[in-house]
Image 1: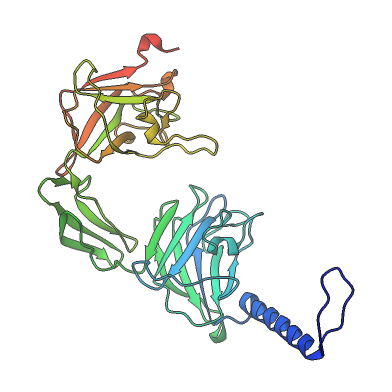
Image 2: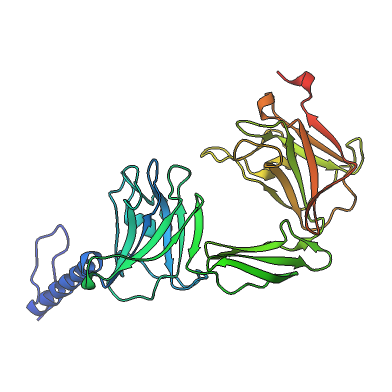
Length: 375
């Protein structure tokens, strides 16, 4: 007997009962699997809660659970396969699922402000999973982030009470790695680590001594919220930066159209630089680019702008060199746009030394446009 099913949009044809039953059974099994994954009984639930007030709304762009203190062994929190995401009421165009979809730009955001312990975001796993030891979370900016974050779990089959695993205090806005405890002290390339002291299981400091010929911006290794932050021991002289020292406040931001380094005090014999531009942070807007590379590209139609207003020593742009400069720096020329509010009136030229940055001596500085050219 020859059997077939109808095509979409055409009258039904004859079909074998056995084949039809198999297809219906497969269809029902698929529906059951999806329903179980999305709304079935969970074995264990993990969530984060704002342990401090959130003024405007709690925004979480992404979150990932890990089973080790170093955040290297992720738990698969997939709403279509391993369980269901849940959260407090979400703002439009956001949702709990988006926060666990690491490539989604939407994330989750609470509908409004959150009093302490009022808002949550979590995942209900339909199978038992190891204990969460670390989380990577990307929160919003000031007013849209929780400075204190609590990690909690519960097993619905054993009651409704949540058990607190950890609370991290004074968490900064943006991306953060939060672990139960500092992992083993890491080793350091081109340097040695010693004399480690711990305030508790999540905070510690170690001394760093770079090898001969190498230096670090800060010669210490820090564990903050259970995550190690490593300095780099780089070749002495491999980073040069220009730091704003005056006025007392540059607001709304420091803007540099172009900058060049020279081997002669009269700003001739321009030095060629090969490497990567860097800065204290650049202003970000959707339809423009203010990357620090714009300050060194020789094009005055592009620019670098600081991320925020500048006080003395807080803002800089610079360059990380692949090879050390062939000649010492004797002159710096910085071109600003028109408008005094965007200008630095005094800068320092600094180079990476053995134990941090050192001011380069005997460098002539030209800050353009001069006072007579300003509007």
